[in-house]
Amino acid sequence: MTAKSFGRAVLAGAVAGTALLGLAGSASASDTAGYIGDGYANNSQAVWCVQHLINDVARNNNRATIDEDSIWGPQTKDQVLWFQAFVHVQPDGIVGPFTGDNILYRGDQKYGGKSGSCFAYVPSDSGLFE
Image (cartoon, rainbow, N blue to C red):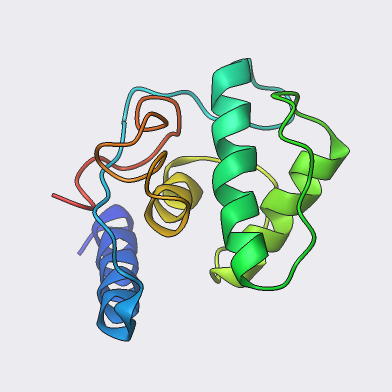
Protein backbone atom coordinates (compact mmCIF):
# COMPACT_ATOMS: atom_id res chain seq x y z
CA MET A 1 0.00 0.00 0.00
CA THR A 2 1.44 3.38 -0.97
CA ALA A 3 1.75 6.21 1.55
CA LYS A 4 -0.92 8.16 -0.34
CA SER A 5 -3.32 5.21 -0.27
CA PHE A 6 -2.59 4.64 3.40
CA GLY A 7 -3.25 8.31 4.18
CA ARG A 8 -6.55 8.17 2.32
CA ALA A 9 -7.54 5.00 4.15
CA VAL A 10 -6.76 6.59 7.53
CA LEU A 11 -8.73 9.75 6.69
CA ALA A 12 -11.63 7.74 5.29
CA GLY A 13 -11.75 5.76 8.52
CA ALA A 14 -11.71 8.93 10.61
CA VAL A 15 -14.50 10.44 8.52
CA ALA A 16 -16.54 7.26 8.77
CA GLY A 17 -16.08 7.25 12.54
CA THR A 18 -17.23 10.84 12.76
CA ALA A 19 -20.26 10.02 10.64
CA LEU A 20 -21.20 7.29 13.06
CA LEU A 21 -21.14 9.86 15.85
CA GLY A 22 -23.85 11.81 14.07
CA LEU A 23 -21.65 14.59 12.77
CA ALA A 24 -21.95 13.59 9.16
CA GLY A 25 -23.01 15.97 6.47
CA SER A 26 -22.82 15.80 2.74
CA ALA A 27 -19.40 16.85 1.57
CA SER A 28 -17.23 16.79 -1.44
CA ALA A 29 -14.04 18.42 -2.48
CA SER A 30 -12.21 20.35 -5.13
CA ASP A 31 -8.88 19.05 -6.34
CA THR A 32 -8.38 22.22 -8.42
CA ALA A 33 -8.25 24.77 -5.58
CA GLY A 34 -4.83 26.04 -4.58
CA TYR A 35 -3.26 25.64 -1.16
CA ILE A 36 -4.00 28.40 1.34
CA GLY A 37 -1.42 29.75 3.79
CA ASP A 38 1.86 31.59 4.13
CA GLY A 39 3.62 31.82 0.75
CA TYR A 40 0.57 30.91 -1.37
CA ALA A 41 -1.56 33.10 -3.65
CA ASN A 42 -4.45 33.01 -1.13
CA ASN A 43 -7.53 33.85 -3.15
CA SER A 44 -9.64 36.13 -0.95
CA GLN A 45 -12.77 34.00 -1.43
CA ALA A 46 -10.82 30.89 -0.43
CA VAL A 47 -9.51 32.60 2.71
CA TRP A 48 -13.04 33.72 3.62
CA CYS A 49 -14.28 30.17 3.18
CA VAL A 50 -11.57 28.83 5.48
CA GLN A 51 -12.31 31.52 8.07
CA HIS A 52 -16.06 30.95 7.94
CA LEU A 53 -15.98 27.16 7.99
CA ILE A 54 -13.43 26.96 10.80
CA ASN A 55 -15.31 29.60 12.78
CA ASP A 56 -18.36 27.37 12.59
CA VAL A 57 -16.37 24.52 14.15
CA ALA A 58 -14.87 26.89 16.72
CA ARG A 59 -18.32 28.18 17.79
CA ASN A 60 -19.55 24.62 18.21
CA ASN A 61 -16.56 23.88 20.45
CA ASN A 62 -16.64 27.01 22.63
CA ARG A 63 -13.60 28.56 20.98
CA ALA A 64 -13.32 32.22 20.03
CA THR A 65 -13.89 33.05 16.38
CA ILE A 66 -11.84 35.33 14.15
CA ASP A 67 -12.82 38.07 11.73
CA GLU A 68 -14.06 36.76 8.39
CA ASP A 69 -12.22 39.46 6.46
CA SER A 70 -10.88 37.39 3.53
CA ILE A 71 -7.30 38.25 4.50
CA TRP A 72 -4.71 35.60 5.35
CA GLY A 73 -2.86 36.72 8.45
CA PRO A 74 -1.64 35.55 11.86
CA GLN A 75 -5.13 35.11 13.35
CA THR A 76 -6.30 32.99 10.44
CA LYS A 77 -3.12 30.91 10.56
CA ASP A 78 -3.54 30.40 14.33
CA GLN A 79 -7.17 29.32 13.79
CA VAL A 80 -6.03 26.84 11.11
CA LEU A 81 -3.37 25.50 13.50
CA TRP A 82 -6.03 25.04 16.19
CA PHE A 83 -8.35 23.32 13.72
CA GLN A 84 -5.59 20.98 12.54
CA ALA A 85 -4.80 19.95 16.11
CA PHE A 86 -8.55 19.58 16.82
CA VAL A 87 -9.00 17.12 13.94
CA HIS A 88 -5.69 15.36 14.65
CA VAL A 89 -3.88 16.59 11.55
CA GLN A 90 -0.20 17.49 11.92
CA PRO A 91 -0.44 21.28 12.47
CA ASP A 92 1.44 23.29 9.85
CA GLY A 93 -0.91 26.25 9.35
CA ILE A 94 -1.43 25.46 5.66
CA VAL A 95 -4.73 24.40 4.14
CA GLY A 96 -3.89 21.62 1.73
CA PRO A 97 -6.06 18.69 0.63
CA PHE A 98 -6.13 16.80 3.94
CA THR A 99 -7.00 19.85 6.04
CA GLY A 100 -9.37 21.08 3.33
CA ASP A 101 -11.30 17.81 3.41
CA ASN A 102 -11.86 18.25 7.13
CA ILE A 103 -12.83 21.90 6.80
CA LEU A 104 -15.43 21.14 4.12
CA TYR A 105 -16.73 18.15 6.06
CA ARG A 106 -16.98 19.72 9.52
CA GLY A 107 -17.86 23.35 8.74
CA ASP A 108 -21.18 25.03 8.00
CA GLN A 109 -22.80 22.85 5.33
CA LYS A 110 -24.46 25.84 3.68
CA TYR A 111 -20.97 26.80 2.50
CA GLY A 112 -19.03 23.55 2.89
CA GLY A 113 -19.79 20.09 1.69
CA LYS A 114 -20.64 19.03 -1.83
CA SER A 115 -23.18 21.70 -2.67
CA GLY A 116 -21.81 24.61 -0.68
CA SER A 117 -20.46 27.75 -2.28
CA CYS A 118 -16.97 27.12 -0.84
CA PHE A 119 -16.65 23.81 -2.68
CA ALA A 120 -14.51 25.27 -5.48
CA TYR A 121 -12.23 27.30 -3.22
CA VAL A 122 -11.01 24.88 -0.53
CA PRO A 123 -8.32 22.40 -1.62
CA SER A 124 -9.04 18.76 -0.93
CA ASP A 125 -8.84 15.24 -2.22
CA SER A 126 -11.85 14.85 -4.50
CA GLY A 127 -11.97 11.09 -3.96
CA LEU A 128 -12.62 11.32 -0.24
CA PHE A 129 -16.36 11.90 -0.22
CA GLU A 130 -17.39 10.12 -3.42
